Each structure stands twice: as C-alpha cells, then as structure tokens.
Length: 183
Image 1 (cartoon, rainbow, N blue to C red):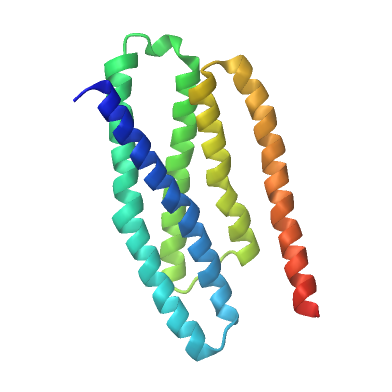
Image 2 (image 1 turned 180 degrees about the vertical axis):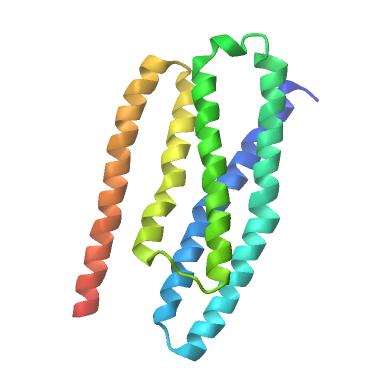
C-alpha cells in the first residue's frame, strides 16, 4: 500500500465522517422540534429519530472517525515524520482535528441526552451548533491546501466572515419561518 492509497482512504473517510457530522445535528433538530407535535405523532417520530441517530452514529460516524484518524496518523508517520516539527500548518490542522473529535463526542453526549428525553437546546440552538462542523471543515481544508500561516491568517479572516454569514442566514431563516407561521 502506498502513501497515495492511504491518502485516498483518508479522504473517503473524512467525507463519510463529515456527512455524519452534518446530518446528526439536523436529526437532533428534527427530534427536538417533534416535541411540538401531538402525542401519538411525536412518539412515532421520536422512536424513528432515535433509530436513525443510533444507526448513523454507530454504523457511519464512529468507523469513519477512527479510519480518518488512523489513516491520517499513517500519513503523518510516512511522509511528514522527519519534518513534522517544521510544518506549523500541520500542527494547527491537528489542533482543529482535535476540535472536530471534541465536536463528535459532544454530539454523542447530546444524542444520549435526547434518547433519554432531555432536550437542553432548542431547534434554533441546534441549528447554530450544526454550523460548527462547517467552520472546522473550512479551517482544515484551507490549512491543507494553503500550507502556510500567512495565507491561513487571511483564511481565518474569511472563516470568521463566513461564520457570521452562516449565523446570520440561520437567524434570517428563523425570522422568516416565524413570520410565515404567524400568517
């Protein structure tokens, strides 16, 4: 197996992991918002959401996370190990990856809470939380592609602007839905 084989595997599992990181919070939004439904409808929906969340997390997200981390570690070992200290962009990327792992396990905790009927966050708060993965994805991709901290600083400025735009869009959608529901 060559470096390029491992890199291809890494990219495939990063995409798979992110698919779950994007979709699970959305399922948590729907699960939370199902509390406003009539009891019989709510019970059916919540049972199905629990099933979908469990399958997504255990069958896709957990294996994809581990295979992403393992293949990434192999790539660092094979190609970058000798020069690891000189790649400051890689250190920063790994810091963001740790943030991604923390986000993954935060989703796991939220998943268990929702299964137990504990709804700490509103649908709107979960929609905002859903954007954390998007922001981390942008940061990681910019670092991998640009590979230097000066360009990364410009990327961070763009990332902050992007985060503000995303949060504003979520807020505007919420306002629009509230207006529509009042009519």
